[in-house]
Length: 329
Image (spheres, rainbow, N blue to C red):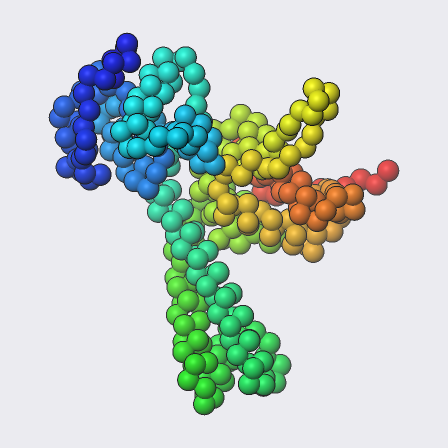
């Protein structure tokens, strides 16, 4: 599309691989082209390929229907979306309009991020198997011997494997495989971040292990990108949407949820566990006050926002967590 928004060329189809990208490179020079694309499955590869070739390229964040030109339409085809993206590309690069853009991490950060995802998936699978095994044990009145409590402890699994229950044995073996993968992922993260001071600093907050620290770190991917703690709060999807009622009152709505759902999950876990380690901390007292005046999940969300502000300060200053008890009046 040229400056007058006239379509001067269009490619009906090309492969999302090096050959297809090279076709674009051979036909459109980096000096004369701007590229804007939707942040979909191959987005990171597309971005890094064209960025390395010298193109002015951006990825459009289209999650949660935040780009109404594309999400709200009665006529939706790839060609129509491409035409709209071309107009939006022109508007963005000429400064006529601002859009919510996606952030693309470097390759090493993406590897770490995917390892965090794999570890999370395995942890969820372990928890599901744990529930299934316990349900099976209840069905057949099976009890762990001695003081064994956790089904996925090595001694417990050895005992369950010795019983004459084929289905139970299969579930236990699946559990062992999942736990093995969790340990592999954990070792991988420890290796990737063994010299990373920011990750170590995050782990100085009791309740944050390598998985949670690595997830937070890879999602933030450079605290310097955020001028204020509130901008990070918004980025991870915890900003409260506000709605004006009758032109007079500003009503509190829901969180925007535009960020990474995994990091919100781990932040919630940290908030709930935090008072067990730091019952006198400012965050713990804040969480307790909120729970007394609002529903539990809203209190957790409010404390999560406060925790994100603490994390932003830690990452921007490269400091460990400094426990400061709340001063009683």
